[in-house]
Length: 411
Image (cartoon, rainbow, N blue to C red; front, side, top):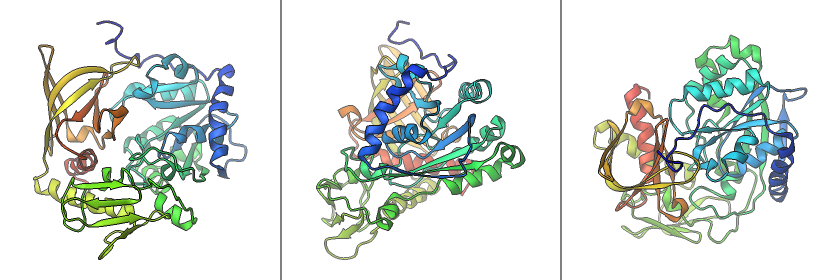
């Protein structure tokens, strides 16, 4: 093992954010939030002091800057995915960041969070959706979140943000420049975290995390005249609702269309879809996304869902950067993920059971290398780039959730 392949030290205790570095975080954050005309509404926050657990919605990179502004001038520790540490591990550790590999069972993280809240008496900021929203609505939360809250016995605060997804959706990161809002709300007192049951806490969290960015856009009359506002939309709207063909959608400018049947839609300045001819099946983008999920659910329940392709595999064992391992075969079905390959003469096998992953993380054209799915173990994260399949990663993400529900016997 050399420095390039050495594993990231996940056990190193998080430090309290250095006072001397806090102005740097403010300098990086405030110009951005001022540019987007951020307004923050606070409920139940009067007299609120550390320690507390801050739960944040997750829509775009701007989330971290708004979180910093919302908590100003308080000191905070952040849970950040491993790829966020690349090339800047020392700095992120000193500003209080804690590393996490997405969608893995991580008892070490619980100890890190406990150290921040119970030992240091600071604020811990957590983004429990663990990925940017795909369609502008909230993602499913892990059931373990309620257990964590009961265990920590500190107040819980929610930071719900609006406009970040609209400004730079994950399927096209070019900024639109719209205004943004945030709501900072105390959800639970320390006493309530002990008196409420885990299911009750999880129900409260699920209700509190609900958001719909396209509905928020329309309700607030936020017009986005960005000429390329629909470019990349086919990455999430991969199935034509007219002819039901998958992976033949394309987009450019303010339009999205199906190459199979020729039907096309335009995206208005208020974020709604309008068919250029005939019926508009789904004016509301999240409804189109829900239609796709239902199609996937039917395949999963019928046992017909299957994805198999050769993938290019990059490894990220630490924060020094990606290591190209080579090609492997990825299979995804109701038995979960199975990655098989041979790297430099060594047989490789990674199996992810459906019960172990309630969701998966995907990226579109990740660093110009193409769409990818990432699968993590406790010691490594593998970025998988399909070699022949086009615009398939969103369906894989939906299928992961539906396969988990099936395995767990949940609706």
